[in-house]
Length: 426
Image 1 (cartoon, one colour):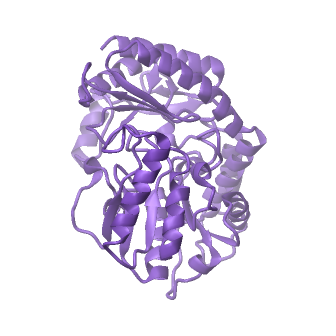
Image 2 (cartoon, helix red, strand yellow):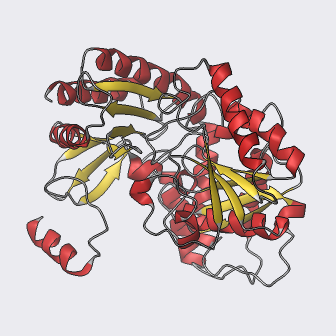
């Protein structure tokens, strides 16, 4: 790997991060496992950053991609595209948004860019509400609504962004309140903020903050926000890039934990739907989606080959009830992780839902983030045959766990045992 690593450093930007002191090259995968170039086998608990949603090398997806590639790989949105229409029909129905329209992109970043374009145009305003500790992508506009300092590469922005409390339940000024009081305080903060501005276009929020360390508010917060937003005509954008497609187990979309006042105006998605193929997208009410008054196309968004993969992958997910599996196996895994965390002084909190778990590490006896410990556990887990992710708004001190949604009980136990040894080693 040293030779490839040297070549990587010679041509790839320094800001492209690599995991591990000795980076690994993954060569192939099957089920919930992957192999590196040295032949080492790993249980994959990160799925290419929550992207391998079903299984590695899913035969149904491989077959759909191969057959479509044999016919036509690309045509653009200038021509009718049967796989794109088929996937759009299914996504529109599943979205819960009435009279929905779907626009496909190539990534979650581009999906959020599109949502911001729609919202600011529809509302004739460049003011956006975003959540503290949030992450929405790496483009110029997406960075400007990111409330996580580690990913905010510039203070320049095409948008005026105002940050709202609520995305992190167990840190910040409202952490000691009950859930009901927490929601009440966050709503009051939102009301106060809106009292000092005018003409806000939209609130964008992740139901579970991904890069932020799998933090989330109490259920119902965004429903309470929605009452305030509706009075001001402000749109609600739910960033489902990491939470969509049943990963949280309890719901198909993360926003459904906050559904009391109806669905969002706009939903963005990506990652898991393509199972590794580059698919993102936006779902919005027709009056919003059709409000653009200038030409727009997508050269690569909705390509026949990626859409064929998306149709096959979504079909597999629904036919095998992987949302239900995420709820069942994820619930067992979270219980096991919480039991492990209770015996490790460095573990501040184990949180999450479904197959989306975060373990926050601190210096024992304090609330101080411990990124060194997170890095050490990541290394130890890899040595034990388990791949994890990292994140968190507090110096990258959260272990992120998000296996494919087909994870078995035996694999959950295997991964938890490896992780237990890695945590105890620190």
